[in-house]
Length: 171
Image (cartoon, rainbow, N blue to C red; front, side, top):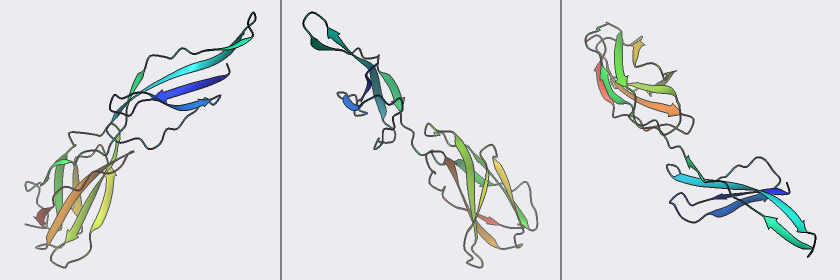
């Protein structure tokens, strides 16, 4: 083997462009656009010599193209709500559903943000498992109003935060 050639399209079904021609067995392709499906094909290069004519004959046979989808940030978690069935004097329970789209990458965690509107305190963030669909905020002040939002994180990036919900502790 005298080398490997790798070609990729533009992610829109356009013509193939060569991105590698070397002996390397590893390749990182950068500057790809999220959410596009790229076709990639490769060939092993083997230069042989025609003994009778002494010409350099390059025999290249490409593989069938393989479809690769680049991942994007996940969608926003759904249905963030205050569970009013569980009432605590200094706590609030919120629930949500996973996003419709994971963006093509596994979800890692949720980030919950809570800010006390009564005292105008800065938001505090809590990172929890991607398997969780509820969380209990403790240590709240009864009668105070809080703003709560959530986002989800994956290997590719984070979703946007949900619209905030307003919650009164102990009410």
